[in-house]
Length: 168
Image (cartoon, rainbow, N blue to C red; front, side, top):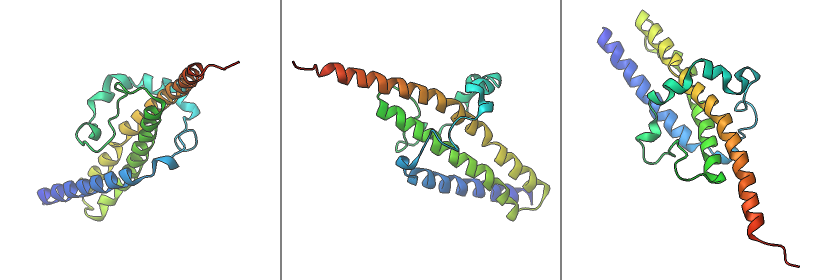
């Protein structure tokens, strides 16, 4: 009986994973407004202090990142490209990832449709809660990326301005 429930649960989370991947990739990035609700930082975030108290830097890289394994996904690192265009894309990716993990968190209780047992209750709760650290990572990284993005825009504007001297 428990093996059947475990199998059903695994099929459920694999299905959710595939659906969420397709939805996340299909989301139009140009529609994302990272400076507005729900993506803007909350006052209680306290400029990342809340997450630093939870020692997020110590554990965030230990969690799986699907972009490390799927070549079609945008890699979630700055790498060599520090252009404003690339940084903006990373910010948008944090918004998509956050939204997808919120949807997965909310979808967790749907497993109860397949299992009303104690296992089903515990599995759906744990699955939902397993999305919280990923949401926290996005909420921690995004304000830092936005600050870097704004500095990069200023730097690029200065470089552009200085490359075209005013003729007299």
